[in-house]
Amino acid sequence: LEGLTEIEIEFAKLRDTIHLNQLARIDAEIQLCEDDTHPDLAKIIAKLDEEKDSRLALIDAHIKLRTESINEQTRSGRLSIHQQFKRLRSDFRERMLLEATSKWYKITRERRALDIIVPDFAYKVP
Image: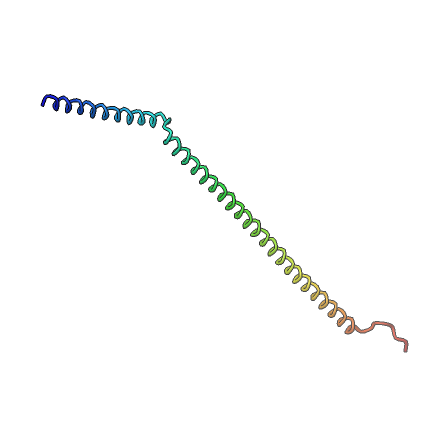
């Protein structure tokens, strides 16, 4: 019976030693995590940094394309407005020329009509 008690005591000491060793390993890993030197944590952080860099590159590319698109829309809008202005100016010029030409012809016709109506005031020999 005394031998059995001694075995139980030794077993309890062994269990406590194993438990303390496990706690020591866990404390060491916690310390590594706090110091940012844990190998698994370093791998995870590296993957997260890589993912972050990838996403930032994607965002930068999206912003660049969006900016180029906006610039192209602005340029094409300005070009369209300028072409519309040139067309309206040309139409206005054409109307003004047509109106001026019509007035000129009207004045010329009136002048010729007046020239026909005016009697000759020449001296007539009897």
